[in-house]
Amino acid sequence: STPTRTNFIRQIVQDDLARGQHARVITRFPPEPNGYLHIGHAKSIVLNFGLAEDLGGVCHLRFDDTNPGKESPEFVAAIKADVRWLGFDWGGPVRFASDYFEQLYGFALELIEKGLAYVCDLSGEETRAYRGTLTEPGRDSPYRDRSIDENRDLFRRMRAGEFPDGARTLRAKIDMAAPNINLRDPVLYRIRHGVIHHQTGSEWCLYPTYDYTHPISDALEGITHSLCTLEFEDHRPLYEWCVANVSVPCQPRQIEFSRLNLEYTVMSKRLLTQLVSERIVAGWDDPRMPTIAGLRRRGFTPGAVRGFCERIGVTKADNLVEMGVLESAIRDELDASAPRAMAVLDPLRVVLTNLPADAPAAVQARNHPKDEAMGSRAVPLGSVLFIDRSDFEETPPKGFKRLIPEGEVRLRNAYVIRCDEIIKDADGAVIELRCSVDPDTLGKNPEGRKVKGVIHWVAAETAVRAEVRLYDRLFTVPQPGAGERDFREDLNPDSLHTLSGALLEPSLAEAQPGARFQFEREGYFVVDPDSTPERPVFNRTVTLRDTWAK
Ligand code: ATP
Ligand code: MG
Ligand code: MG
Image 1 (tube, rainbow, N blue to C red):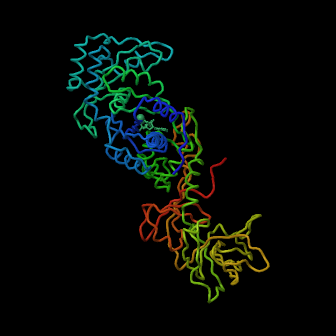
Image 2: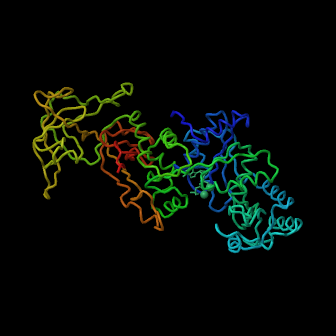
Image 3: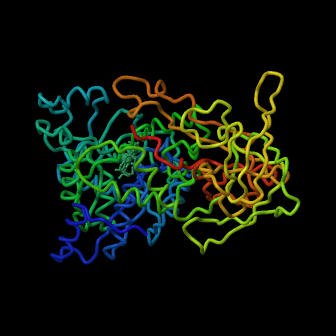
């Protein structure tokens, strides 16, 4: 596992624990079940669960489900699976903000009784107009001074379903002239008829807002530190107002940190949903998606995602992380752990004209150059092979070290061969090479000359045909949709290349979905769940070297 780096939040929590402020730390991760988790959520997960894990506390998984309509059990299930896959445990029941709807309603009545909340009949548009701006104070709602009795009665009737959507809201009575707009009598409840909530069904036609629900849910669960992203900094006074004014058992401390932004992708759930619903990608788990499910299918490991999150750290500074940082996390891990294999992505036929009769039927190849413990495997040889088309050049550029007419190259783990003859089709395209082997080069260097290039290959007779999917960045610019642009204009039209005729060494035929390999000289690959015994499908996780560096 990756060493845990400290950060300013961890320092605050440790100090609070050292001062005896809390017996133990309780954090929470509060996703809204309106989409799949993405790599930005992973940052929050690693922070919240990691902190609790390391400091002997617990982290709750709580679904922030106050927005019925866009939320669904499918998303709940996917989020749970992704958190588990990352290796975290919420150590108790899964929680839902909707579990607290009855209590939240009771606290709203408490606010009414204290003269701290009122039923307001302004429309949404009017409420916005009354709210004022950054430079102008808001104006009091004409309903602000309703009596406690009238507020209580109206609020109960709102719950009973007497009023249509938008007719009334419950608002906190704070300060319409507050410099912080969030304190200008924020809406606590709105009426929503006719939506089925995935947890509470049609029990409610009244739904609490996030700003009201979140602090109280935290307090009810005894959350000690409520970690959220920077855009909630301005909401903190409202968070504190809520927990200070209702009878909750504790006052959690909200601390903000910066969101993760990653180059060449998008992370807003609205945009990710659009990619899925408009079928721009194949689904939430499309390997080009920045979702946890997409990264998993792409071949990322939980350790690589967690390592990436540790590496980017936790600060208050907004920044844009390069894709290369994410990729190097998985590359480093796979370099150490992935068995090597040979796969020819774009096959060119090679006939060995003089393969000795006593040539071995198979050569022995190590599964990892640096790790003897990973063992070795037999790779069948034969007089007809395939090499990659790009490893032969009829008119080679300067410095080309692979196969050229009358040149020599070593077949990885096997003989040195020489290209004697080029066979072309009627259009002049190269379709086959005739090569001779130097029989004295199996496991040793040729006499009297240096052969620099080494290429990979597969034997025709035993090769396994596979589909290989090569992924490129989903967008062509670091910040898709920046400015006023529609983010779809920045899509990379070539983000997926499907190679249907790749040929693999036969040991790969048995590989199960999720198995990861380095295809020598090509990159790291994972078996896709679309695979069948007849037709394995491999996804390229990442290239061998960073291709993102500018
Ligand atoms: P969106 O605005 O795309 O809907 P969200 O922040 O509303 O995203 P939630 O499901 O509410 O999505 O997020 C759950 C938790 O994950 C929140 O605490 C949120 O702060 C955190 N989170 C979401 N996106 C990021 C990100 N890019 N970086 C760090 N934390 C994030
Ligand atoms: Mg959201
Ligand atoms: Mg949210």
